[in-house]
Length: 126
Length: 126
DNA sequence: TGCGCTCATCGTAGAATTGCGATAGGATTC
DNA sequence: GAATCCTATCGCAATTCTACGATGAGCGCA
Image (cartoon, rainbow over all chains, first blue to last red; front, top):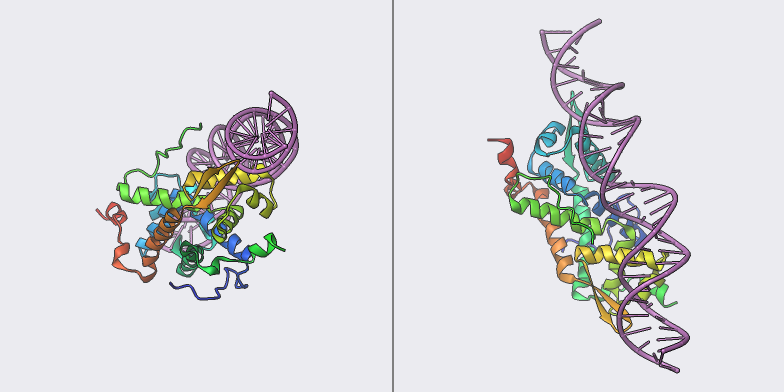
């Protein structure tokens, strides 16, 4: 239960419903491919995280891995810093944690908590 | 019916890891569209969950909503039961909980716990 | 300077996704 | 049976995704 009442969205603005859905969908989409989940797990399991290591670890071409890394970078889940001739990739643990929070904010509905009555209802019952 | 993709790639890893990555990616992909996040939230916020309500709630055509529901059904996140002339949709809370667990199993790495040393390392350090 | 290494990007092809209208199927009601 | 309502599916077009090889850009080193 690490869900505070108010949680800023990825860009810092308050989390309205549209923002919630957009952010959750964006991060979920970034993780919506087994290769990208594998990359994230691989990065989390190591401290050294050079692109070459990932390419060796996956049965994919270097260009394909680079493209998956670009998707992860665009989503904010992964950051890449230039280190000489190489690029050191790391998971942005804050963004990953925020993703967990977004999923958790879906979860309270598992208990049918009254919290689940979002403003969506207003649009249905004006 | 379409043939199941059954990705041949990402082999050479223990079945646990491959299953983890496949399941997490599949569920994340299902939630990787704002409309589907919206549908899931809407279903969780109401006890009555007929398809028509969802169509009215979303700015999308009925056929498009039905297609999104099919994606959610295929992922297991949503179940649909025929109720007379209508179909009552509900979120499978167990599957949603499992999704949260899968994300949480990614999270311990936030603390750099030794748990994060998965068998991935063995392939890199023989 | 020139070479080699590392990674990003381009171009391309095939597959998948997204959205819609039109239509078919199934159940209820008259 | 006929009419009606609700939902799934089909067909289509536009877009995006995925994967690859080839090429280019940037850095370090001889």
